[in-house]
Length: 138
Length: 185
Image 1 (cartoon, each protein chain N blue to C red):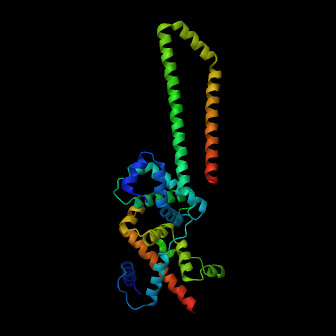
Image 2: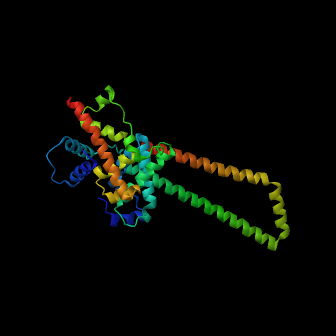
Image 3: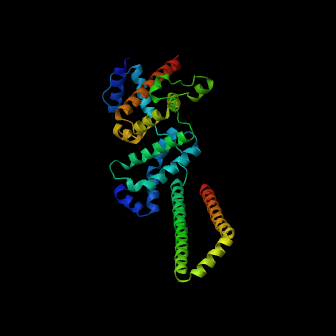
């Protein structure tokens, strides 16, 4: 059989058109088309939709928490900037002495900030791990 | 039953219960597309979850220009390809155009036992085809997408889709004829 004949046979089967008397080739094509139309045995896990929904919910909460922490950080930063500005404007001596304390204890401030960030990150990591485990069990 | 026009705006307003309806409506389609591309059940489930998370994230960009099923199938197809590329299982060294040069597993007692009927033999042939061919055949025959829709899903020109379908079926038919002759003898 030529390619043209294959093309015609395939088109006829696709269109469900009247087909010529059975040949070996046609028989094979019919068998092939029937097999290709058989539903695939796919395994959709139980509660798949709920699991997807839980993951989206968990992500939403993480984003919402992140926004909250960023807002808090922005408020603290702005308050510190405003306070520093006011001190510099109205009480420069006090501002200089506070700056001196900050510089003297800089490692304490840096360490505290680092520790707080590390605790937050560890908490987030544990929460993510626990949520994933819970979702697997669910 | 999920109604695209009525339910998508509800999802966009944050209704996760309605989104679950969408997942239930299209989970078989997504699992079918992804299963045709990947083999491990665990990988399949992970990718399917990612597909629906992407659907949820991108739903705002769905403009009803195509059927929702076509749009979701495209996300499933691209996610599977990305997954295969990420884990270097996507065979770029073997261009899908070279189908004629594809070597199928030789018949041996084990494979013969596995394909003791023609249908099992066809499934075995199907599983040995390159992923792109498997997907095109599945989308056309099983999911009944049109050539245009398959072109939209895979990003291939319509002519290429037709050519892939034709060549894959012709090659499988030739293998099947040889197999049936052997069976009769």
